[in-house]
Length: 255
Image 1: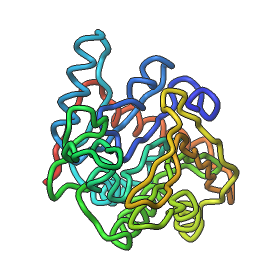
Image 2: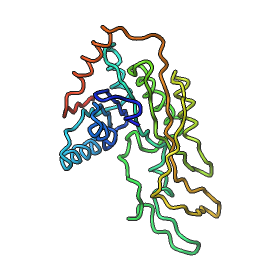
Image 3: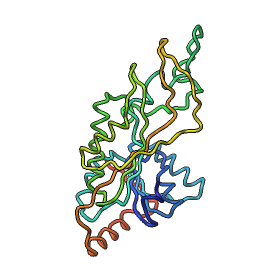
Image 4: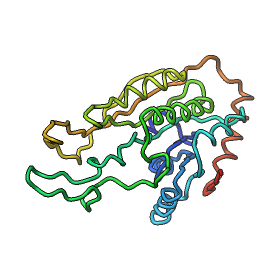
């Protein structure tokens, strides 16, 4: 994705950077990256990975994405070439049955936090803790509204999102993302289906009701349409500001 939508030295933003997958990809493709993450433990994991792999860390900012990007948007010379992120899944890692191991009819339950669970426990009260769906939608709207302000006209935003099954209903989160970002001003250009070959197909049943195996995610591709081209002077100011903002190894904390 990064090589398709950017050139070398371009500036890439991940507003929910987690353990820094996007930032590591920036290193491997000679791009500059800025990540924002609210959980310090994921930032620590990213720096540990960089240390193990001898990769110079990109810039990571600790704090709430919408608040940090609001401050950045006040500077007209700060602009992003591409946004790539995997958004927090609404409730996915706090739903009891999604975190536990399933049992056959007649077996004793093995507990919701068994060693076989591949999902991670998230910090209580974080952006990934239990939310009502409306609160999740507000988080997405608020964050990507600020992202829109700092994205260069004519550039793209790619969002990883998977659908989910919750409380007896299948939720099309990719459709929610498309609706919310389109209302902000992004133009949906297409979707890419990412099939996870490591996931096995199963025939699940919860309380004797069938639920689907979810073995894929969507990469939703949006564009901020260009209204008018930047002047050479405007481009030079943006390049100078981006160079200043992407000083290697800088970690900032916003309270």
